[in-house]
Length: 279
Image (cartoon, rainbow, N blue to C red; front, side, top):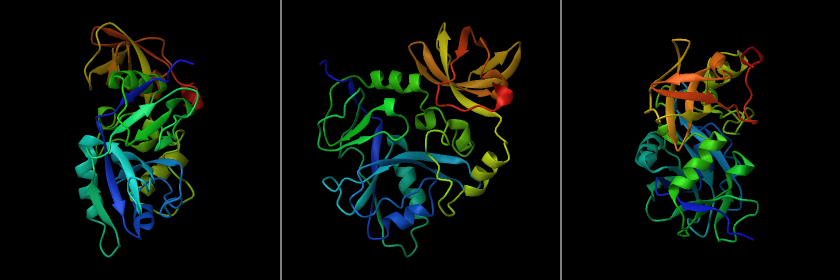
């Protein structure tokens, strides 16, 4: 059997939330359900986001427990550039909660493995967003090229922090947090919940982050995307002929869009649900 593709993820870091109140503390602040964590026995992960009080994206992370790496703690796998921000934002709400926050980026290697079988490594957690996304691996220095994983996640339509989302502007449902399991609709209140719920239940969504094939030179981030001369979106991250673009719903099913001298061809993935009017 050929070896499974793997890559180190040097652009990812870890934030540690330790202490007896760790799960309850996060539960009242972030978009997903943290109740399964806090006992040191959870073997899964949860994709979640921290929002502004107005309901806009600030950062997102993969939450998990790994007592071998951090006993009595929840670890948050976050874009490394956002680790200090996440610690600072969470610290504002600590008050009397018995929690301690620490940026452990650089101390524990972060990597990814994707393929058919789980990796035989000490700390590996299945990416909860899509089965095809593979596994996150912690504490083991992996070989491979980070660009390989970048192409993999772009092909699946998975956003990567501020490369694809706009801080204090993006609404979670624009970026697939509903279909990809990044929001709990059953848990209690959390910061920014009102806008997130209103967007879903009132059908207010007008744009989506959509994978695109790129024909021609890769456009820079924020380059305007047009359809018949009208602006219908903006380019986000990409490489090697694939990328993500934030598109108005009516453009997400278009055959071809213009972006500078490049042609973008939207490819709506199977997991993405678009309103009937946009289909």
